[in-house]
Every structure is written in structure tokens, then in C-alpha cells.
Image (cartoon, rainbow, N blue to C red; front, side, top):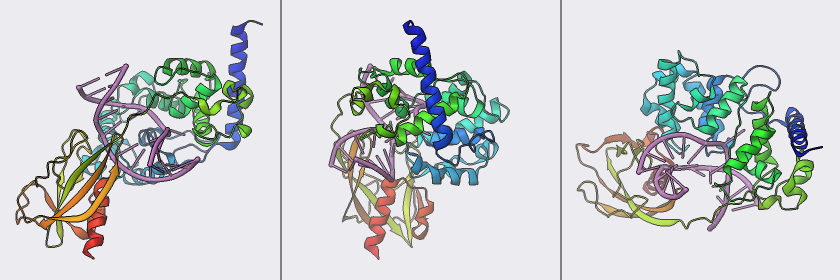
Length: 353
DNA sequence: AAAGCGGGGGG
DNA sequence: CCCCCAGCTTT
């Protein structure tokens, strides 16, 4: 038997073993079609895939229910105000996704007659949809064969075939291997099965190889080195930044601003700040004159590339809110603040009780 | 090719 | 505490 035939048989064995496992153990998720029955709703698949980018399933569930309740389809979402979409997204992170979500709904209405295109290449042209998401939607929502590769699948595949290059250099080899083992039919189920496996069994630390349906085919497991894959590049040290947020209150209201459309927390409602960035500490200068008193509260929040220690200055705000809008303190939960500023709000309100 | 971009859960 | 997650866009 030559190596090509062996490789094809092995690939078939892998996909058959995993799909059989999936038919019994698939996670029940709100955006997933019931096993073996109805077809998935493309709007639900798309929405969930955008929300799941760099985000865990547990974090997404509540937001998915909220969005489908507020906006049941592309038409309703496209008709919504962007500010409302951003506010509903508040707390989920990576806010460019919310802006692109809204833009994408518009393009589906204006260029695709209200229906998501089924072709992977056309999906790839829509805002917020990259290589992973285009493949996932084509395969899961439309039953097209597509090669789906996310971080879970990178881990599973790199272990299956003991791909020893460090990421991201290993990506082409991983994609090629995933292509080889992806079946012609049910590639969407296969991708979801691989992701379920990565989430529950083939975990980063302490993988459960003893119950893994792919263990008989897994090179890293056979070598006793599953946890050593994938090989990752060395991490960079995370910087500490300091900054100030300004709590300007007047008549039970607090002054909120809208952040710039680019950069950190782009376009989100926020407390005014002293121009801290990922690159440098704040300058300590208030955005407008008032009798500022520095509170002893410090809010600490960790972003991808730095940690921020944010102090909070308090003063009675100006009569005219030139810099933003006065928002009622008793409904700040509806302001759509990112988590950093929600922490600041909690700290101040607790102090004022 | 590398950097920028949130937040929360798990070990 | 560190690590990483159903990645995309911009530089």
C-alpha cells in the first residue's frame, strides 16, 4: 500500500470517528440546528460566528439571546441605530465587531437582497467576515464543503499530526492537514465536531486523551506529548499604564462622552479621561476646568496588550455639557459602557452610598 | 508580517 | 497569577 492511499484511508477514519462521536455528544447551543433535523438559520449562524470571534461560548450565549430578541433578522438589524447596536454589544469586547456587524447587515440588504450569500468567496468580502468565518458560515449554514480553521482546530490538528513548527508559521501546514481530513459532505458538522473536541476534550492544558475518539489516530498522543502542541511563540511582557477618569456630576446625572471612532473602545460611550493610551500614561490634565478631587479608588483593568490602573477624579460638572451628555446616575446600566467604565461607575457609586 | 483590539473563565 | 479563547482589520 502506498502512502497516498494510506493517508486517504486515515483521513476517512478520522472524519468517520469524529462524526460518529459528534452525533452522540454534540453540544446543544442556541444557534445550532437540532441534531439531524432542521437546517440552521443563516442569520443565527452568522451572528453567533461574529460574537464567537476570540470569545468563549459561555460569554456569547446571553448576548446572542438579546440580539435575536431585539433584532430577529438582517432587516431589523440593518434598520437599527448603530448607537443602539454598540450599546447592546457593551461588555462583549472587540467593539469593531459590532460596527462591522451593523455594516454587514446593511450590505446584506443593499447588495444581496436580504439574504446572506452562500458562496465562501462572497462571504469573505463582507465586513467582519474573514477566512475563518466565511468558511464556517458556508459549511454550517449552507452545507458547502469548506476548510474551517480556528484556534481549537489548530490545536487538534497540530496534535493529530504533531506539527512542530511554531504558530503562526505552522498555519499553512495545519490548513493543509485540515483540508485532507475534511469530508466532502457534512464538513460543517465536522468543523463543529472538531471545535467541540477542542473546547471539551483536546484542551490546552490536561487534555482528556483517555476519552478522545481521535486518540487512536493522534500522533502526539501516541508519543505522549499532546500537551506540547501547538508550539507557540514566546509572549511579550504586558505593560502597566496609569490614567484618570473624570466623574463630573450634576443633579443626579454624570457627564458621559463618546469616544473617537478609531482606537481603543472606539465609538463607545465613556467617562472623560486624561488621554491615556496603550502607548503612554495619561497627562493628568482634566478635559475641562472644575474643582477636581482625586478619589482614592483605583480601577484596574487588563486589555490585550497592557494593564490600566485608572484613578477617578470627582467634581461638580459645568452647567452646560459641551463635551458630552449628562446621563442619569440611576440608569447607568443602560448607557452601554464598556467594562472598564462600568467598573469605575461601580467604584464611585459604592463610595457615594 | 506584525500590531491593535476586550473581556472573562479556567488552571 | 497567567493563559487563552468559534479572528478581523489596519499598518
